[in-house]
Length: 467
Ligand SMILES: Nc1ncnc2c1ncn2[C@@H]1O[C@H](COP(=O)(O)OP(=O)(O)OP(=O)(O)O)[C@@H](O)[C@H]1O
Ligand SMILES: [Mg+2]
Image (cartoon, rainbow, N blue to C red; front, side, top):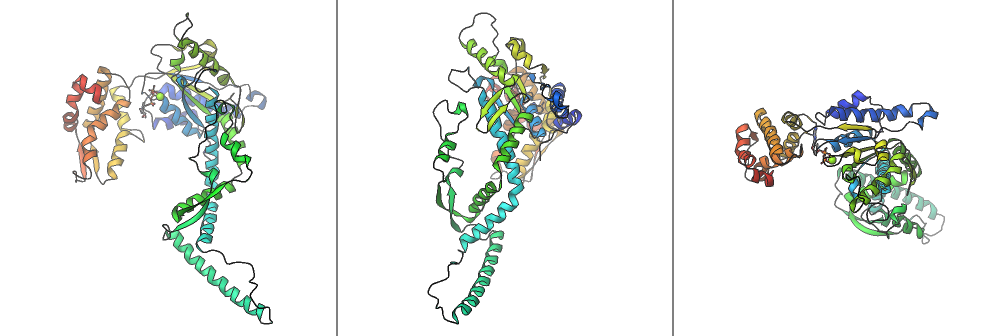
């Protein structure tokens, strides 16, 4: 299973290094926080509950990797992860989402995650079962009741047995033939009629009256269980589709949902990570006059407090205790400061870590080093059309330089600037392939970068709109 506590802090940092350039302090803090959970789970039992997670506040301008670090960390840890915006929440009693919903969402995530792992493990079996059921549909089974018309004379039963076995073997040969055809995809487009359980259709969403969601009650579950027997409806679908639908259905029959729920709850409580973005936006700067939006902002902080401190949140899968969930808050803190948060909340985020503005040199690395580096993404995109893009080194340097310049002159949006610059730079070739551009290679050198971008970069008004 992907649930992995065992990376050491150094290993965590070097894993993060594969995706995020620089920001060493932030990586270090999150690595410690993650490892501390493993340490806690291995501490003496009577100490375990006393050890609190090291919640972190990441402070830094936009687009420098705050969200990316948290996201990658969660992925590394195989931990349930959600990202929420502090500004989406409103104080209890006002219209808007209540803070508890983040824990319910995190729990949903965990359930899905564990269910997927289980599904994965029964996949093979589910596929076999699906194959059998599709064969049943294609070759309806013989009527098993003995026909009353068969004369009951002395020779009767005898000849019936003979023809039965013959029929059987014929059937099984046909079945094998069809099985082969099924596997080679020959029957993919043939239509079959299947029962689709209506509670399976993932599109169906029932919105309950306000307040229901708060209690973690799902209307669909309520109604679904009312009738007792699940409704299903018949649909004609191609075999190709039927195979997936039936396999999914079989898989869910093979999975013990009680086990999934239990494990998912455990995982949320021991390993969940909640990333609260834009925390600075709910910090109020004015110390005195409490009116207008400040009331509600402080209210949000007060509502956050018990969750971050550790309390129980009722979800539709059961009670989730938040004591050991790791909270990572993040914000630019341009206008407000962490010290503008209410003191109790500050106390729950003992670790502060600053992320730095990215330099030209960072941009160069971001373009080239990470596993998912932008240049690699564009290379892959164009390779799918049979075109090889080649970026010369000085071209990449020039792009990095331009990104830094525009960030300085217009607005600092961090690494996101690279996206806007690259889309502008590559727009023509992306548009022309495969109709107008028919060569195998597209070389991007410094001259080309300059030709495509110089006048945009140098013209502040233009770059405001284009880049
Ligand atoms: N240091 C970095 N190394 C590699 N890629 C980065 C780095 N910083 C940002 N990026 C890339 O830039 C984009 C935006 O980064 P991210 O979402 O982490 O910004 P953020 O710091 O959370 O900003 P905001 O305050 O606006 O939420 C992502 O695509 C990310 O991959
Ligand atoms: Mg972010």
